[in-house]
Figure 1 (cartoon, helix red, strand yellow):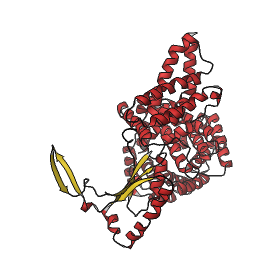
Figure 2: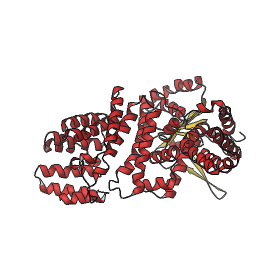
Figure 3: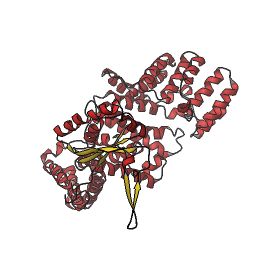
Figure 4: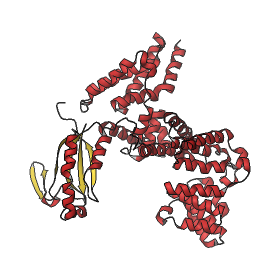
Length: 118
Length: 407
């Protein structure tokens, strides 16, 4: 089954990215992706620029409404995600638990819908 | 003939339903669809067996019928079409086994118990899910035991089953490094079923009392399925000790009788002996745990039936151990009560004061003990205030009457 692991962070956590802690955190990602790839479970993933770089597109009927800022006006914001193919939820949770992390981050594990045509 | 056939269906439903469901659900991960398929299979058996005779292997017949139905459902379901090839392959295994190997048809109920108490399942749904899938209780009966509307309970159960299927929760025995934690959740869920009956000390609601039997049954099943896990035995022992005193908790007019005032001749000695045996067996495995300690505390209380006295020193010591591994508010209040009995009310009071206010605030036994200790320390005004809080937090009319009688 394919799962997406969505990585959320509070603004305080996001602020840590700037300092030396952030550099150390980011350096953990390459070996982690390698571990996922070596295990044959990695599909894709990306880290995202901070929420203040986001632009949200909505529709009022057919009329486009473009707004500055992220979709969800919540404290915790999506900071990145990766997608894996593993047998079950426990396996997905196990990988999620190994994800490089900073204090205050949370990981949402969501099964993907089966791809169309399957 | 038809009477014999009907009885055979009933017997299969009673003895094999949970094993058949666990087998089908473990392979399809579709608990609700497996339940439906199994219901259809039992319905077909009621029609078919009286006419054509009871098959040599009723379980194999039911499994084949349910499997066919489940595959049909999977084929018709568009969204979860992906599961179909795996499902058919997995269930083919069932067909192979429908032959001679059927007698060795594996018991997957333990996996089902672990799925029901999986941390990814809403905690409020775990016990109900167990009661429904493993014991076959209907949602209305479970709802009344947990004091929620049947429709709400139905939704909670449906949501949990959908989550198992769509989130891909595996039917697996957890790896040994995860087993203790996952087993705890199973034990908690079973104990919650027991608690739903126990809280109702009044026994005023017969439907609530009913779940006690179910909890004991689940506990006994877990001991059989996990014979080398001492905590499974600990939980069964704990429930049996509590259950042994059910009749004694009420006076002739239905009034509440606290443990210290109970007539031990009204305790069930067979239950106490069974609990003693389970606890002894658990102890031989050399791995202590929360439920064994709680059972041990109750076993000391049970000894009053033989010795005529309560060994509060031992109880206080056991509570020390319990608070160390499971510092729940219940354990901490128990420790304070035991220390007050073993030594003096001041010692108990000091321990009670260590409990964070927010933890004790809504916990009835905290205030009942506070009132009792303040009385013994000759602080009547504070005792009265504490007693009022205890009375206000009472759910049980008999307990309320008991506390009012002391006021």
